[in-house]
Length: 462
Image (cartoon, rainbow, N blue to C red):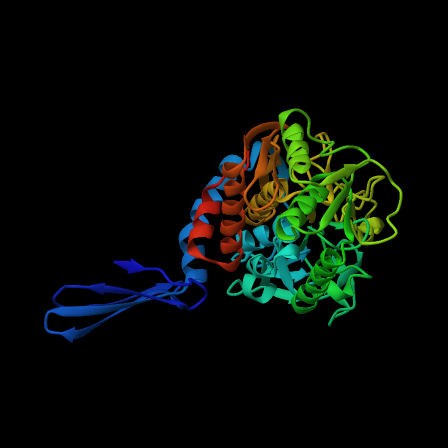
């Protein structure tokens, strides 16, 4: 009978067995790091107590790395491209700019093969799709945030808090950091996107967002805003949500659930969920109407109440403009192997990019969310492993294939719309449960827990 505890690094679970005899087993990883440690102690002549100590970081990576590598090679890309790899040292220096979904994913994949430095202004990881509920519910907020020191524990990764001010072919200049410069053999840009106005539901630690750069200050800022909403409800003032896209609709629904006395106005000039057509859009619009959310297309400013802006995101990659790799929207241009398209011969083949900040040449735009970001990160991880293995010889690089587009729009904790490629496939409680499972297991994976890591090691991106 195995009782699983909180499986964090060096956590302990216990097994009691009715048996005779005794044993002591130690399993070593790479001859040094213990993965499993069994100790059996006789407490009575007819009973043996077995204490089972689990080191999840080492165990999970040791057991699941081959599975994840095979799954990445099978599903991350559909085609290969033969190129000539540059000679690389045995453990090259890899710079990762950004610690979001794509960045953390490829760090986990490559930690055993590269000396990794991640530059990220924040000292925490936040599950962005759940932050609007976290704004309304302080207890939920704690479940979707984790210190980066915990997320990177046991990976041997160096975290530098700061921002990249300029990126060149072999080094990056930093600002507001403990060091001025980071040298690298390879670099991956996973800088993500930032809110156009404010940092309510997406924060990157850019200038002006210093109060959200640490876990404590971020939590305090959201608690302050939560209190403003309570005061508005007590004083009969409205909460005005600006923007009818995914963020605006989800926030209006969360406010309706957690602050039932609060008047909620959704200012949606383009309508509710304009990027989603058909049943999914109608379902969300009807839910808002039924639950008393006032939807208006008017743009007049409210003179009273709390205004919450959810009008979209923008890319913050001006640090790479010296490589001449940005498109007209400031996105990093990459080919299907996720190599940055730059005229600089020394940089091409050494700098990759993935996630919300990229524009993949020859492919339609992808949604700015975790699913395509992690798929791109897997392509980068696979290709960097291939380049390292080739050691200057011929190398097969994977190309990003077409990806399905998934969207889950929460309508409070107990309702949601789940769409695949623009078509609603699920709604109501089942759709809400799907998003809950995604959130819980993804945070387990970030924390290095067994169940979440095992689940996402087997989930393909297709």
